[in-house]
Image (cartoon, rainbow, N blue to C red):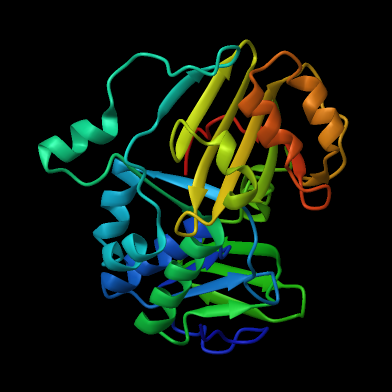
Length: 297
């Protein structure tokens, strides 16, 4: 993927500025470019990397992305489980309920969901934006403040450069600098949930995946979701734990597998086997935060 270097190169006379080059910012950029807008997107990271773990695209998300011409690329990268659903935390047996994957197939609809690595989805979007407009993305550009008047918005960056356009969109995450500039500093709200994430080679845990490629084990104040990505070669695991407090530092803290096993004491052998196989290096935890809706955009 081609991207500009740091600074405001090529950003003059843009219709819309986008701050943040994650999935949201890239999707917005691609949609606007396809509507004929001149978009300039600024991302503070120096390079896009293989960051994150698995994500699930529901039907509404898939339809939106397909409308941008991404269906072929997504279906080439994603895994589509034949069946998915919940399982009991104690017995490991499947829970009842409709098989949504089968229902979608019977209706001739798109799959109920696609599952893939976040980095693969991000790369699909970044490549599509770069093809649509090779000058759209600028990396290594950290926005520090903005100014607006009746005629537009000026974004100022850490390197001393600035760019101006009639419209600026903030897509810079839970700690949005754009939001803070517009509405003041405000700490995000802890949701009471902590997520533990890990990736395991499928061959290491094949014997713990006999319920199929996508299973969500449900229990009191806990759940463990596991599914295969990267054409079945990797198992993505995420465990959600309800807690009253969060004392971790940062948004992605190294997690002790022994700590995670303790939190799932008494769960079925497949869950505990999957957790025990999580890598000692690379298993992470972070709190899930949210913000109250804004009264205006």
